[in-house]
Image (cartoon, rainbow, N blue to C red; front, side, top):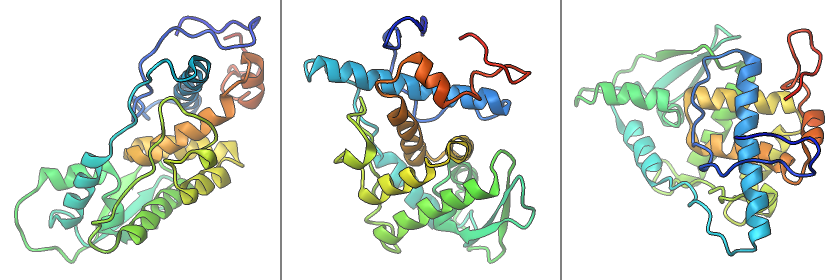
Length: 251
């Protein structure tokens, strides 16, 4: 990123690669996490603007292919390394939330545990407890809701598992995008009514590493930025541009 010119009606950005399917890290302060999330969304929004201006003459990066993601979830769901029940413990609720192995396997932090022990052992009846130190209870509930909805559509063996594909560049609102299901668009629109909740969810999804949902989260933020000037962006997300004393800082 070269600069943001407040005198221009458009965001001045240098050509950039497509936004990553996962942010670099969730292990940094809350404000910095929001800034990183917003930056990824700005890049996606700028790509959408450039794509619209090119009127189809400029070929953009390919959408994410979830074939391997689906294969990994299915393999994890069958692995005896993960008990049939998993208790996910968010940072603000010691009780935790007990979910099925299939739901837990939507998170790569759980998949990694299955890959570490791929021995053909008998399935354990004990519940595995996984602390999620960067995830709040409300965000965890939304992640579980997303996974359960996909499992319901896919069937018990997950053979019909599929995810919405966010186009690159983003062509418009999620609910008007053919490759995004109506259910997913409605899910994200409801969450986006509260920006704090949307940011917390995005950060939580990045921490547990669930690429299909992370794509939807950053795309929904980007949807709010398409066609906006730098000043308008600062008004939508004042917290991101606030200094330590709460006063707005120059970007």
